[in-house]
Image (cartoon, rainbow, N blue to C red):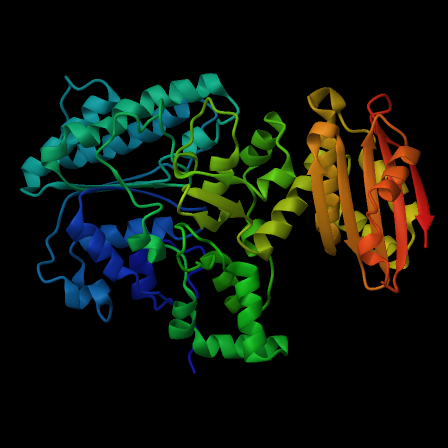
Amino acid sequence: MMETLYPIGIQNFEKIRKEGYLYIDKTALVYRLAKTGSYYFLSRPRRFGKSLLISTLEAYFQGKKELFEGLAMERLEKDWVKYPILHLDLNISQYSSQKDLEDILNRNLVAWENLYGADPAERSLALRFAGIIQRACEKTGQRVVILVDEYDKPLLQNLHDEAMQTELRNMLKPFYGVLKTMDGCIKFALLTGVTKFGKVSVFSDLNNLMDISMDDRYVEICGITEEEIHTYLEKELQGLASRQKVSYEEMCLELKKRYDGYHFVENSIGMYNPFSLLNTFAKKKLSDYWFETGTPSYLVELLKRTDYNLYDMAHTQTNADVLNSIDIVSRNPIPVIYQSGYLTIKEYDPEFQIYTLGFPNQEVEEGFVRYLLPYYSSITAVDSTFEIQKFIKEIRMGDAEAFFARLQSFFADTPYELIRNLEVHYQNVLFIVFKLVGFYVKTEYHTSRGRIDLVLQTDRYIYIMEFKLNGTAEEALQQIEDKQYALPFASDTRTLFRIGVNFSNETRNIDTWKIQTT
């Protein structure tokens, strides 16, 4: 039997179709896009299939009928008209300066001018773009198709630099504005990216784009559904279960837990991360493939710059206006984190139109929290896994003294001059450590009073912890007694630890801890 060819890292539709790679048919949705509108915007997380969607549209508008044999498009499309296509991919530079963006745009414009002609009177980037669209339409007798991949890469790379953001925005705004002014010469346009910048940004005047990022009709256009797994990968799924030495049902549940759970619209089906899923089938091994390709550093920089409480990040509530658009002057990191795929819609309150967000799946939750650890402690990325293993062993053995001595080291040698809010920093380190320990953890934050209550349970031990800021460990321990935190476990046979911990702003670390055992 011929082995399945998985299109990992392949974003070219023609290559996939000609060389026999697996293709999950999205062409019915492509046809709907092309026939029901002209201007679209789609945001999806990285490696979610945006570039392949762009490539599929390009092949369709080039009239390459032979590539669509056996797909839904073959029975839907009858005309197969060839249109002039302007395809701009902004994913090939790091954009450390305004010149990087100017060079990319200029290179594409020159290539298009070689095809359709140039006018020396057109000096600005926007004027040249508009002239190319007009001449392409006149020369071919067909209106132009414009496909922009990763439109937001220059802006994302400079989230930390407001001055650079302004320069790049001032360059992109008139360039993308051509899509509106040249409407009569444009057949179709799609801009894709990870995020949507709005308000004072590049989309402020481009109000003719239909944003399908949270449109229920197009939820499935990128990513893989559970139904598609069973339709296209059923034999491979059975083989994976056999290789992992688990039942078919257990394998389905494990894949769902690890890679499913992306909800781009309220009350919609969950989407699987295609990159992680296809890697799992190809290598017949479960792993955090999405994270192995690298997590954008701009997310951590944004979290730290805004002194964001990580516990709140994973339990936040917001509305569609916040989710749908990023305002570069805002200090709220949630829209960027959501649109980048690290949070997703968990619940929706239709009465108040409020979204509850959370991590989409195990891969994202564990990977993201593990990635954050070196940025919030003195532990390096290489050592972090080993340190967490030591934490787990100490908790399993009931060695609370060793556990807190190790925890104390996590706060040592941190460049505190870069930390504006020590209280939030303490909470974030604790959140990361206890998340990574991987046990059943109940945490309740009371930031206005500077304390965190935590209950941690293993099969042999229960740890009840109270954290104080600039108090005493004795006071924290007394509060456990006064508030009767141990009462719910009165009949439990496991060993119970009552632990009071004090943080000191003076020492910038855990000052003291007291432990009582029953």
